[in-house]
View 1 (cartoon, rainbow, N blue to C red):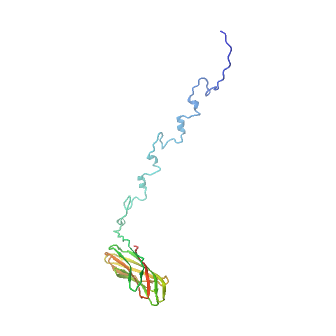
View 2 (cartoon, rainbow, N blue to C red):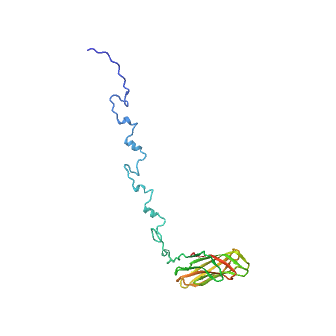
Length: 263
């Protein structure tokens, strides 16, 4: 038959080829090699290739950290002190552990008074401390402090006298001359300090005491000769402090007294 007229030219395809191929192109793995990676390539490029030589789904174990930390047993074995007197754990040292016998610790004992007491010519007890039986050991030590105020005297000579006793027996005494120069109100102040030491304990124990008295920090200090007596510490022991003036022309007050066990 007859051929009709030729139609218009077709529109050119916008894609001339795919990866250099034309026709019915089917993509293959190599077409995307520059865009994506394979599993093997991704694994090779991972910043962590393995964990302690292991790969896959890893669960950390204690052995993974042994190089960084120690176990309780390793720490114990490395401790610089392995035992104390053959003991481990929470150790409590007893006297026998270090070669000592039974240690008797004296009870803390104290007397203190701040009640003012007038001075007279009669030796009056300014302070008393009773120590229970068997509480004293060799070396038990007490400090005695007495403070005075308002010491006034006329021209008559007078002394201030302090006595330390144990079980009503004098251990030592100290005397300071107040002089004959009149001293009017408010008078002078004074201080006495004694130390009492039990040198031995038992039914025939011993106690020694010495000290000094000073008035107004200007008059010479009066000290005493240390005295020693025998005392039975298996029974209760009483320490007391007596004070007085030697002439009625002197007046004043004991302001405070303290007896403290320091050892």
